[in-house]
Image 1 (cartoon, protein in one colour):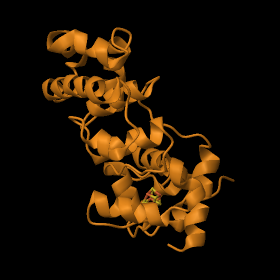
Image 2: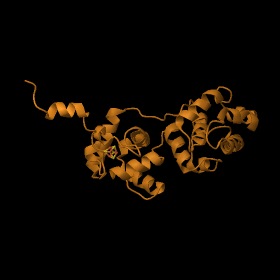
Image 3: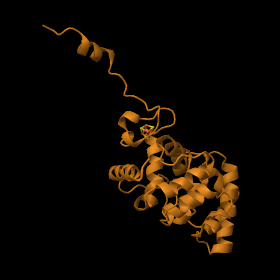
Image 4: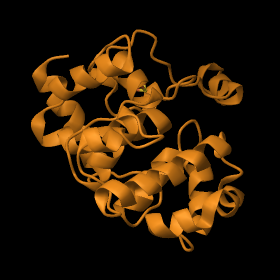
Length: 228
Ligand code: SF4
């Protein structure tokens, strides 16, 4: 994909959604951090359902710690791997208090030192809470980057590094959300909506889906003999 095509691609995604953001519900960097930890291998919908109950009773690391395992787990029990996530959330809250005065740190190194926080989670927090031009490559972004030819790579780290070079600077901060939403709702894993895709002409995917044929009745109507 040429630099001009990359610019056109993001101009179109921006025109369709000028202010993209995460579908996780949060009000503070701390709430976002907890929501992202909970969201590993879970849907945003299941996390939002849990945090709507959880955050009103625990909006700070100290309040979360005060819940303890027995107080936290009932709020998140419908999220996959909730026992491990509860341990990580509580250990993270303890470290936030011990090392960062109860605040979410703004450095990658400090974020990745927190239990349950890997590179992807750190990228989401840096981007969405602090406005850094990072790109957290998840399964959706990995797929879109490879299918389109925007930043093909064999693993998430390679795709992330290539995206950071391929995405034109004015679009870098929001690229994460445009690509994730495009992968989630248009360039879906099993049945990408290529006929309706607004970057179809720029996309290098060889197996683009075709528009569904019209219903049989309509086809007969078009090709059959004209009514007299
Ligand atoms: S044309 Fe199809 S494969 Fe390419 S980005 Fe759009 S939905 Fe995905």
